[in-house]
Image (cartoon, rainbow, N blue to C red; front, side, top):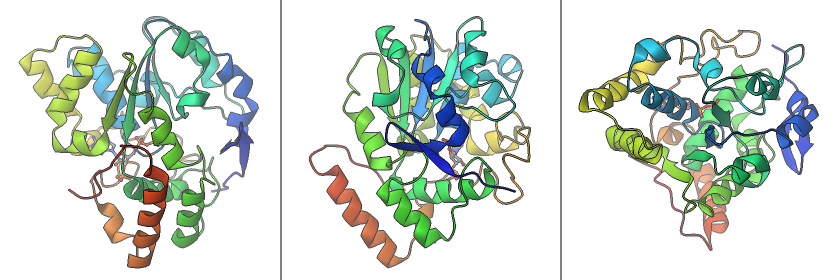
Length: 289
Ligand code: PPS
């Protein structure tokens, strides 16, 4: 599998074709009823996307099991050689659009803010994100080869990976979390009390859910159910782009897997970085169950 080198957009490292399509992303026309699901990569995007689609379909999986998650919730900034960019696919989409993005708040196209579009942001602790991102780099040909874990972790803490710095990203969204059209969630809270998280999202979207619908959404969006569902586990995605024989997309889905990957010294270096980056904010993460 050939990996691609990175380019930069407004100082943020990104994939080459994404950078080439940047003008279309920046000028993208959001509509009032668009809903964006945004995260730093590997923070629970797919999980949140499936929850939102099920909520809009009152928990009826006969309706959501129509297409793969990446078709039901197109990825705004995705662009690949020889394929129409997602911006074009979204322009032609009728009805309510659910839109996935990993852009930091300041790079989200201004039409989303002008239209007060609802945005659900999920943040995950930076150590588990680093591990998940490292494994994902090995499978995803649009990203550069991650090399050894030690050097990947250094680049991650320097923000020299796709979408830049994890800490800048989470802080950019934390700063604006009180805007009424933004819902800020933590992956670890979703793991601990999924039903509560689903209800929070439904309330935010002003969608009533019956007891049965809530239970059904919880069942359908458990890690195991999503791992087994070909429409959410990316097994229908081209193998030449995401080679899951290396690591499955639905890998572990837990809090604290970093303990199996970080050395004590790496953990201490990360803690130092975390303290420095989070000083001056009241944003805190949970790193263990
Ligand atoms: S991506 O490629 O950035 O869009 O990936 P993303 O979906 O944001 O994150 C993938 C990680 O989320 C885990 N995941 C889940 N965890 C718990 N419950 C559910 N339902 C769930 N769905 C996805 C997935 O396993 C990846 O984390 P890791 O740690 O690699 O297992």
